[in-house]
Length: 322
Image (cartoon, rainbow, N blue to C red; front, side, top):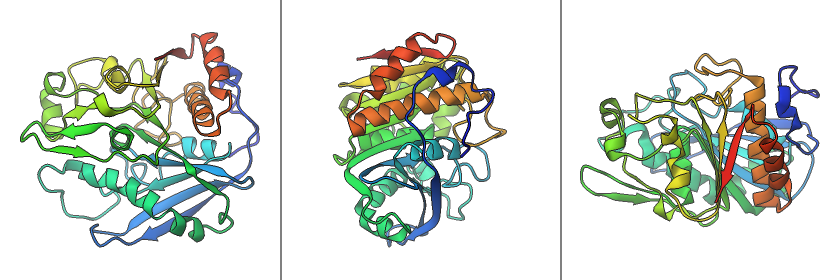
């Protein structure tokens, strides 16, 4: 963290935020599970002050980096949320390139079911996690929990928000809805399958058959308007917004202008895999997601203020709600 704004934050500085506090990160917290090939490693990022802190579970994407697709990634967003009164918990999923495990069996590519189970495991063990972090005991509000994810992590988060997967090969249905989750943030998420997938996409994710019709939990969907992903879909950037358009209930959608899959750099500082590196773009994503989470979990008017601000900043993006 720094005590000043990045000199290139540009007009994103006009999206209001609350004062920040110093943060600390504690890792690894190691949780053993008999049904998991290796122990579950976690990183927890905590504000140095404050009580009754809401919890955000953050699921990493896949990508091709050696470290960002693990608990070591997503510092730009995790520290920002923590600096504004949230506790952020990041697992290293079995799909991480940093883990030595056997290849997943057919139907479990990228260990996609286990990724969702990791988030449930965290909630089931939240008392153990709280006791493992020095200075955290008694500071959590365990009734206020959100889930967030980027890319493949967005699909992981969607499953806890009420989406389900129907395997197109055999019709097998998988659900992992968790009523303990009160809100979601989906960053550059995955869209519809079937005819919308490219030939490469069908090979990469043969299990993938999303059904967003049960995803009723309030959710913010954030997409880049230049996020074209031919390795997955024959459609354009609109594919990444399907979780907004195809799900019921209270939802909000932010389009980040000029944003590609990295959304300005959410996965890491100066990362080679971020094709749209921009402190201004990243600042917009940080501030809009923070405002949404504050209103969803704290019940304040941060989201209304942020929406009003973005409507005056067309160079950053646009917003719609339902």
